[in-house]
Image (cartoon, rainbow, N blue to C red):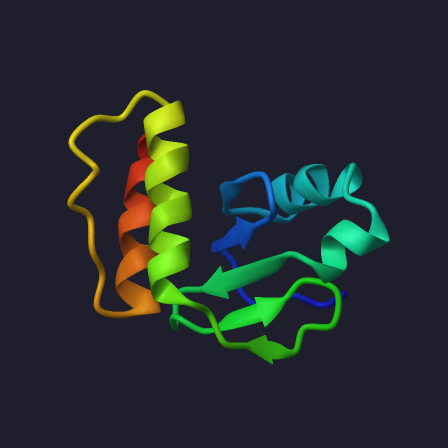
Length: 103
């Protein structure tokens, strides 16, 4: 697997994770099975999404990903997130990176 640019958002079935270094990427991928990698994706700062296992560009349902982000933020203790909406994947990426850089 070759990921060209960091930072990125790693999207798995269980979580959305901000990855800013090779070591944090290695740590995040260590426990993922090959099947989990095939079902996961990452988003780069360009707003493009790629399958984690194949590095093929993938289309993302922005509404579903926004809902997933809202759920994770709520679990992490953030408030006032119910009205979050984004017009592009790049907007969601920027917002999520700002939130997770602070944590």
